[in-house]
Image 1: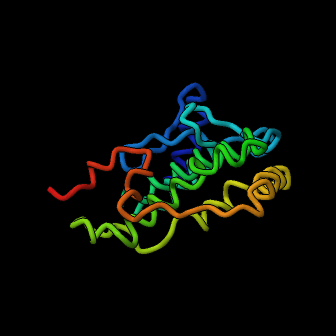
Image 2: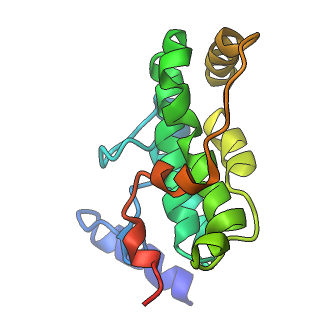
Length: 176
């Protein structure tokens, strides 16, 4: 019955748009896959630095978990965008691309050492990587970026600095 009512409303009022909201965030519209995949960067209708299909996936996937999952996944997507924009600058952008991993580690493994709660049980990045680099062209850009980092060694940040890698306001998660 609800589906029939929804179809009636769409047919009767074609000028009215319907939006989806998750945890107070209005999702961008679902992009047309053909248009979205016709360029490396895809469609970002709200200009927040995250492709609309990826943003929708993040909010749908993590809506029932602690909100920090969404913040870290959105940060990862913004970092991955740098790979598609300038893979030839791999050594310059590596820190931005990897910053979400360090933020993730802090809230999954190390926050308790600084009298803060561990807010995560699972890593974000393995899942979002496959969602973000979802076409041959996007994967090719990632492999170009990755190959430019190959052969070098990189130090891991000190544990006490991991929280600083979060590019969002972390104070909303501090103990009250």
